[in-house]
Amino acid sequence: MPRLSTFRLLTVPLLALLLIAPAQAFNVNKSISIAAGRTTEGHSTVNGSISVGSDVVVNGSLQTVNGTIRISDNVTLQDAGTVNGAVRIGIGVRADEITSVNGAIRIGEGAVISDEVSVVNGKIEIASGSTVAGDVSNVNGEITIEGTEIGGDLTTVTGDVLLTDNSLLRGSLIIEKPGGWRWGRKDRKPRIVIGPGSQVVGMIRADQEIELFISDSAEVGGVSGEASLDQAVRFSGERP
Image 1 (cartoon, rainbow, N blue to C red):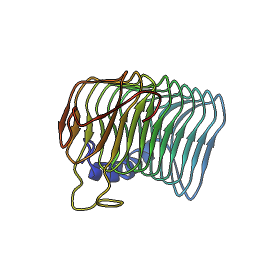
Image 2 (image 1 turned 45 degrees about the horizontal axis):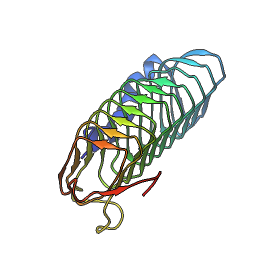
Image 3 (image 1 turned 90 degrees about the vertical axis):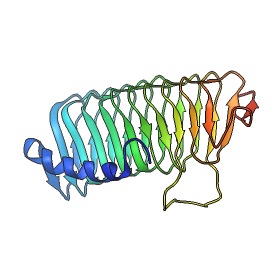
Image 4 (image 1 turned 60 degrees about the vertical axis):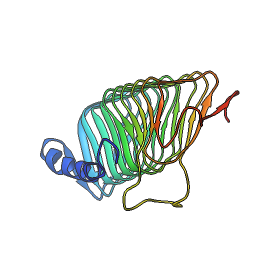
């Protein structure tokens, strides 16, 4: 399983809602909208979405159980998390942590995430010029990293991974072996692409069979497990 365990991913957002509710605005069956340019405390809701206008400062968390979180450009906040719903982040956002259980995470250009980005079932997309100081992880879903620096590990189980446009992964890229359950076809191999100018400082560790493609202009610290550097398909151009 990913470094941030599935159990923790499933339970932390809901527990966080219950713990922080007395300290911030808490709603049930209600969506929340924060106007542009405001400074506000944290907000949480059950069965509702959260929308944040541009240039907002949130001195706290944004949490929902069933709903999407949409954060516009140049917002500063502590963290954003949902159980069932997507998290969509605009340009130049600063946050500690972005999480979801069932839903995609999309992070715009120039974002600064000081901790981690994680989801159980959902895609992760991080646009160019962004930095994530901690880990990036999911269990199921594609991971697309464009022109981004990741300070920790990048971990998946069944997801395809594209690391491109001079991205830098300072940790390792880990493809973990599925447990007693997995989504999708059992015989499908995750497709891992290390694109032009990108670098994996650590290892590519494959705990299961994978399809591995490495650009002629990319660098990796090594390949271990159910794959090897000799077996990797080298390619020129933007994509294999």
